[in-house]
Image 1 (cartoon, helix red, strand yellow):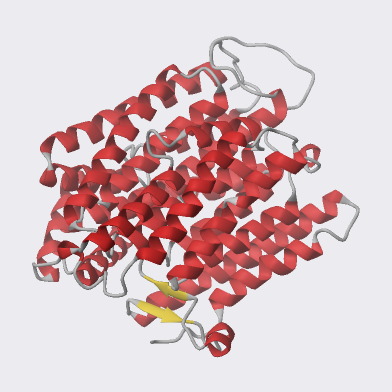
Image 2 (cartoon, rainbow, N blue to C red):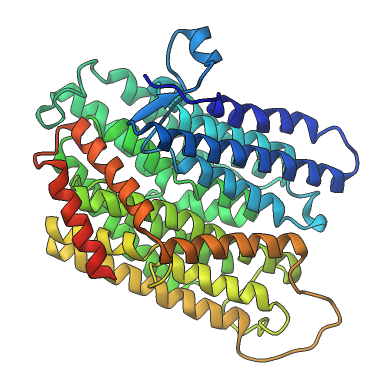
Amino acid sequence: MPELLLPWLELSILIPLVGAAVVKLPKNRDLARRLSIGFCVATLLCAVGEWVDFARLDTFEAHDHWDAVANLFHLDLLVIDELNAPLLPMVALLFLLTVLSTLRTKLDRFSLSSTLLYEATLLATFSCRANWLLIALLIAGAVFPWWEMRFRRNESTRVYTMHMIPFAICMIGGYWLLPADAETTPNDAGFLTLVAGAMLTVGALLRNGILPLHCWMTDMFERATLGTSLLHVLPMTGAYAAMRLVLPIAPSWALQSIAILSLITAVYAAGRALVETDGRKFFCYVLLSSSSLVLVGLELVTPIGLTGALCLWLSVGLSLGGLGLTLRSVEARVGRLSLDRFHGLAEHMPELSGLFLLTGLGSIGFPGTVGFIGAELLVEGAVSVYPIVGIAVVVAAAMTGIAIMQAYFRIFAGHSFSTSIAMKAKPSERLAIVLLTLLIIGGGLWPAPGIHSRHHAAESLLQKRGEMRKPARTSDVEVAKSIDNAR
């Protein structure tokens, strides 16, 4: 297996682990926050470094140079490939922006040490190649919100526990039942493979919050801190589990059934977002609708649909990450938001108002934003499988867009009021706004590198499944035509 120039993967996991211990030492919480930002920046630099280094190799997968983990266990446990290469910087960026936008007044409620530890866990999850270790890390990641709700906020964890325990059982039981040769014949699976695949699928759907297994998400957003809730759901570890554990073994008809369930969830969640009056639950349903659309494309098992889903995965993570952090910053100033009345905050928070609108439109694939081409490819891929599915994708995206615009007017428009408290964005928040704006607009104006990278990843994944029957250049032409049509 090709090697990277440096042990980027191990460094990106080790740095936040060390940071989690270091930030607990100073009693000055402002100093701890500055240290946390430094560790997050270093982690992001390592994640970007491994992505750039991997792109230079022009291969499907690679591992670290001087790989201490491989030397210790004699296995390639940490591997970067075309699927997770851009996801690692996205995860690191989300954590950096979350810590950067955390106000000093919220440091007593938001644990910086636990956040850095969770960052290391998620980066290890997305870097992990061994399925048994991946399942262990997925289960470990589910503990962090539970710990915060139970011990830091003294909130009930009953709903969350009732969903996460079956998730863990399905993951462990499904992988234990899985035959060793299950990946060789995904479209001719035996009974035991189908049972194991069904358990792994239910586990992935639980973790992704697919209807009717979504109640834990709204409960978590209501009871946990908004920062922890965002970091738990935005990376879409449930979709990653489906790609790693379900896609290689499930027959095509089973994957398309999952896509139909995800599509129903997307339409339902978009409808709920339209009528929701609680700010946090509104965001939860918008996120659930968008993440379900990503899962629709991932399970279509076509080059165009999978390319669109992989592109949308990144754009939704960035755009809804910005939308959620904007909502978090507004809450830090005025408290929990109710969408049953007009607040008129645009005059007092002009930067946050603009970012809310930009990130909201970016999450639904508005022209000129990073999600536009990905949404177009997803619709085209869905129509090629079932025409009615493509129509439903458009309906879900349209309802989500209406819900976002409705929330924008409720929060930032309607009437004006005067206050003696300064509510404008802080310098750290302005930095986060600039970063997100550059990524969302830049990705929309120059989409070709990202699209071709995700298309190559989609082809490689389907070739490993044995689903590719056309030469690679044929589907390249199809993607090029789709991009030209979108333009």
